[in-house]
Image (cartoon, rainbow over all chains, first blue to last red; front, side, top):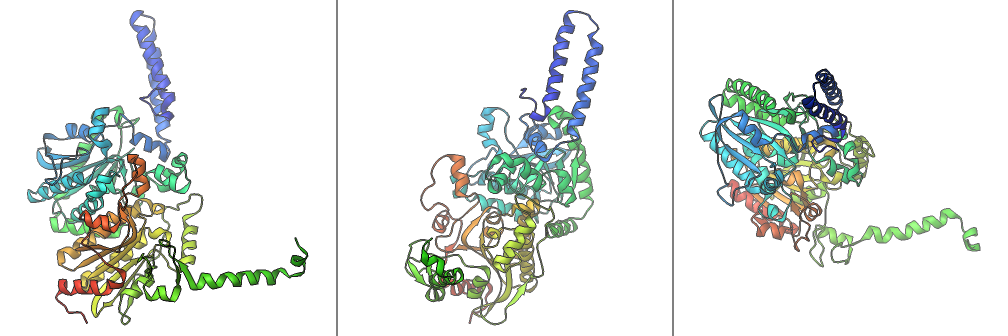
Length: 315
Length: 287
């Protein structure tokens, strides 16, 4: 099994392996292999298209958690310019599961806040696998309030397996830190655009997810409890996670229908990780357009709209 | 089967058995903490607090509001809001059926009851979670009733008091339930901006999405003695960190010690304590 491909993608992996083999042969003799390779490439594209047009909710959860999926810092590098990272909550520490800072989008200053899982093993440990602690959410809050003072829009990138469930997290008030963000974001006097780029898990995702516009990348996922957690409670086994994912409707198409997600940003064929630059370009274009649109609404009106929308959830 | 069983009619026998078990079950209750067998009427007079060990037993939403509010002038808020199964959620059982089972066993439409009334003569809006209904979980109805109650508070500048008892968000309502966290937090923030007091009282237990929203946003956060509250449940934390949790972890006393709550309030002092606080916060005097 090729670790760069998910289980349901193995037929694609097999084809790609064949193509690679042929290419190696092709360099040492000039048999007419070019045509064969082109055919296989075509077949691989078609296969990817057909597999990806039929993904189950659980498959999408796997794509959202793909080890090569672009993370917040990958997008920060590609979507924004002139990035200055800002650190610390000013009370306890600097939580590296959340990155934040000032950058420019189309030349205009914005505050960017993202949850970051980390790529290498060392980085994953340093970033606590993208599971923020209270100081992470409090850093985010500090930066959002700063954005309000300097009239900068806030752009958040959501990607977390959840807020960290640990003794220290509880001791320092993880619940309060999340609750506080929800309260303040509901009235922050600057436009807020939130995008679920990978895994949006529960309160730990929502804590940077309240705003004027909610995007989801096509194969991102957003849930109140992980499919594994849900399966464990209902069926007493994580084996049933695919059923739980289906039942909870964890994908952008369901959430758009429910009126919770505003917009789904299409991913490159085979997922964002197949072409990070293209994905980043699409994200930049949408964010830039959305910011321009939000800027047309006077701030008081925008806040009233945000509030009414929050109140309407579930109606 | 003995000859006696054969000649005693079955009906009579089972009736007698039922009759025999009815007396102790109805009149006596065992304290889950100290094991004392307690005389029910006496226990009720003590607000379901064990007279032997002071354990605060779980009580239902209506009884909670009944023991808290003055007798006169109560009016329920949001009772017309009823659950909707938008996702047609089904696991081993349909969510719709789970709802009707819970409705039958509790007599409530959902897990939150909201009322306006007064406490020691001070006007309040009070809401209480019904833990027996689906673990007091927060879905659309809980969020909506809470919000409507808070809107009454906002419009009339009447303090809001919340008694929470919940396992967290209701997973059968998926993201709709998650969004109730944002919704309730938004309306609480409006109360805060307006200077209308909100007092949050956590009763055993308060976890997950409710803990990470409305339960910890009070101007004053308080808890009953021994109540457990946290974001993640102890089992999840133990599983993550692979070590045993310290004694008393996530209990009210722990929360007080770590600065999460302002005070611990004994159930028998709830009315006087809360009305005393509200009187100082609002400048109105209690009866």
